[in-house]
Length: 285
Image (cartoon, rainbow, N blue to C red; front, side, top):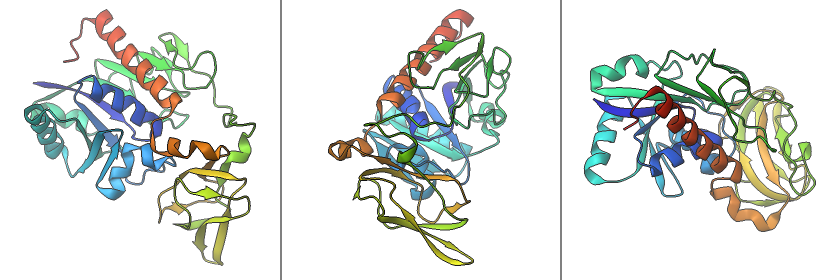
């Protein structure tokens, strides 16, 4: 049986986790929903759901139609010695039940959805289950929770208890917090006008939303770099977080690389997996 690690979610923070696992030689499969809503799309493996393939810092994620193709992709990597990630649309984690029939042993599951709530992950889904952020209590829901809130405890591994509750307040960058985040002003279909990496000015139209009453503009809340915006054609709801601006124009290149927070969380999840594997006597490879 080929051992693999399954990661639920492929957003930018999950991508930091997957990237770390892949670079360390762990066979990893990403399970995503049908319509991922990641904003930092240029550094999110879930964008493969829309574009079939996406590459983040040298690691390529490819959308696969079913479990058989995911397994074949992992097997092919062993022969070619390449690093890539199968992305499977499987919001219900049905792959966990079918994996053994394809010769795959899921030794660990990482919930990296970052939904601020538990979307169905339980501690019985795999021998090792690690969850990220609020909504989980260890050891009831998982074997370890990784703290995702910025600050002194970012990345802390919690084996008894839960992560800090979501404050709803974005991190401060160059003195700006909630002003950086843009929410949909209407319900409808989003169309991008300025894409990720663009330099934008306060009041400038960065997207439009087609709704029954007509086209509604989405405007920049401040001057800076458009660090993230939800995928073109996404059906948004009024109030949904859809974009993020970095006021530091000189940091334009950061739109295309894994963030410090994502790297820190990736390393913490890797640490948690190795710690739990040691404690439980489980071989991850």
